[in-house]
Every structure is written in structure tokens, then in C-alpha cells.
Image 1 (tube, rainbow, N blue to C red):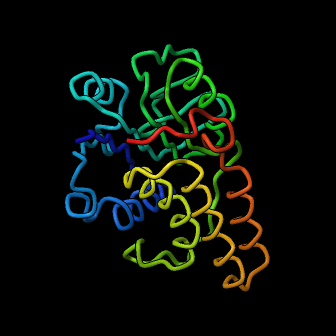
Image 2: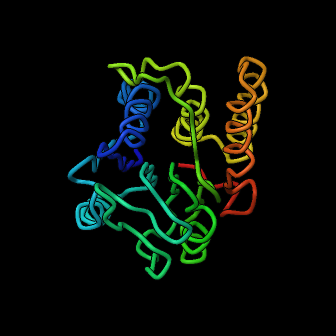
Length: 214
């Protein structure tokens, strides 16, 4: 059984959307969908460096999946508090798989993690952006516009949790984008989904061991 750490936040509309769809598409039926894994969570007020490090050091975590705001060098937690930056030593995360749904962290932070021993990294080298309905629906996870983008990212988590190798997961993402784009009638929305996809980095594109699985 592999331990999995979920990091999610809810302090602005972007993170609330991210958490809503990750809960819907990845974590809602975690025990039945992924019975060989055990889930730990650092959500909202617990999305801090100290709480996350405590989970990592007290459990045999093999996969970290996080959602929050980021910069090229930095992944942040609740209310923008820094969780990791590229000056950190990530040797304590050796052999883990890391997936960050955040802006830019794939560019520098992800590379630093891999150089320090993280087995595989998934993320984005530029801003991950998405459209949503306006006005915002009461139940964010009912928004079909936002779901087109956030479902693409959820394929990564589900693939990792199913012990798929990185190339198979990347191929699944590619197939999803190829099917989703023709369904989007708005050219600007298609452009944003394509931009998210093009700037996705992963072990299949040199960010770690392409054969790393749980």
C-alpha cells in the first residue's frame, strides 16, 4: 500500500475551483477507486510547510499531489504562504512522485526537486489557466466550462494512482485534449486548453524517471 499526500486550498476563486474539481474527479471515491493506496490530506488551513513536512516524515508517502498558486521557483499554500522554493533541499522527498497543479512551478522548482532525488515531477512551466462560468455557479464542480481544463489535470493524478507509467499517462492527456478541443466552440477557450497542455512537463518529457510508478 502506497501513502498519498493531498495538498489543496480554498482561499480564492481559483483555488476553490481547483479543490472542487480535484475532490470530484480524484478524491471523492478514493478508497474504492484506489484500494491499494492510503490518503493523507493537508487542506486549507493545514496547507502549510510545517503540516506537510509532518505528514511526509511520519508516513511512507510515495506520491504528493498538490494544488495552489506558484511561481517559477515557488509553490505556495493557504493565503500564499511559501511551502517549497528552489533553495530547499528536497532529499527528504527522495523517490517520491510529485504533481503540482499550479502556475510555473514546472520550470525551475520541479527541476530542482528532480535533481535532489524526487523520482518524477508533473507540472506546468507557465501559468495554468482556465475559463469558468460567469456568474460562478453555487456548486463549482457543476461548471462544465472549468471542468474542461481541470479534468485534463485530473487524468494525471488518476493515472499515477493506477500505477501507469508516465508515457501512458501523457498519452491519455493527449487523447483527452484531442477530443476536447473540437467540443469547445470558443477559439479563446481552445487556445487556453492547448496552452495548458503544451506547457505540461512530466517524466515523459525529461522531468524525472519515465518508468517511476507507485
